[in-house]
Image (cartoon, rainbow, N blue to C red; front, side, top):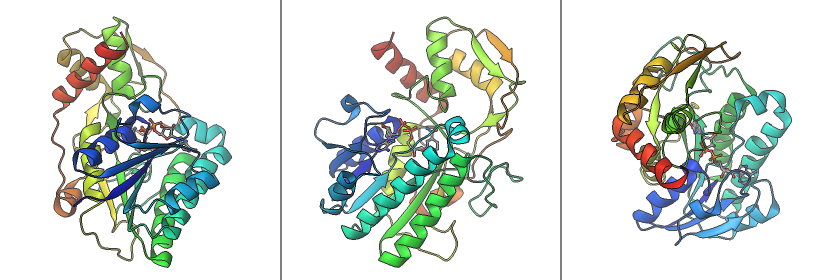
Length: 316
Ligand SMILES: NC(=O)c1ccc[n+]([C@@H]2O[C@H](COP(=O)([O-])OP(=O)(O)OC[C@H]3O[C@@H](n4cnc5c(N)ncnc54)[C@H](O)[C@@H]3O)[C@@H](O)[C@H]2O)c1
């Protein structure tokens, strides 16, 4: 199945890989981005590009008039610390912007909207690990609140206006094009520092865990989420899917793993723990396997090698 897709945030890290995945499957691709963090050169050459803020009339018009079958919403303020310091800015981009996109989806009679949620923040500090979708949602940051509220907007507006909505709750995504200066990108930071022979900083005792998923696997999940049959359901978690690996990796293990994958010995410097950081995070991805027919395919070693090759080819 193919058609026309618009990807907000399509010049960014994950959005540009999603654009490539849809294009490879024969879709006509439009990327919309305000280039606040994304780069135009990351948009695939054959894709159309619209420079616009998701909160703007221009974005609304581009979506409403574009005759799209699917809109994939990746554009966001992604920094948890900015959301803590400037919750109104976070809500403006992540909620007002998303509501504008969904109004345009409705006006343009788009069949389906796919939303980038976050399994690392919507559950808060979960009791159950790996965490399945029905686990109670209790975010601990304004960014987490905006992702959870985004899922509510998707469900309510989809029901009111008749479009389908799918939320993908990503774990920690890594891979080529992730900005090593971004807060989310510990794998990127470690790989880029090791390649530059710099020490790695670990906050706290390094025993905190995360679930690291490769960006091309996430892009494939977004392609499937645009096409497979999904139920609407009467609970928030029915059209929501965890996208991760189900594997828990501590930051200490990550440092050594990155070192082995790219053949460098890490020097680790420990720094005081960062306030508000989750201790453990790992997603149960059996629902995505069952309903989306999606499982992660890229091993951690392969993923890190691809990331290192990208760094060596572009930035060093
Ligand atoms: N990277 C992760 O580990 C991770 C984990 C969970 C969820 N997510 C979500 O995935 C999505 C993509 O994240 P990413 O890591 O690729 O980040 P990114 O910053 O590379 O991509 C976001 C893109 O959105 C664009 N953007 C920001 N504000 C905009 C606005 N007002 N109007 C139009 N465009 C705007 C940016 O220019 C950027 O290109 C985000 O919604 C993020 O919250 C990411």
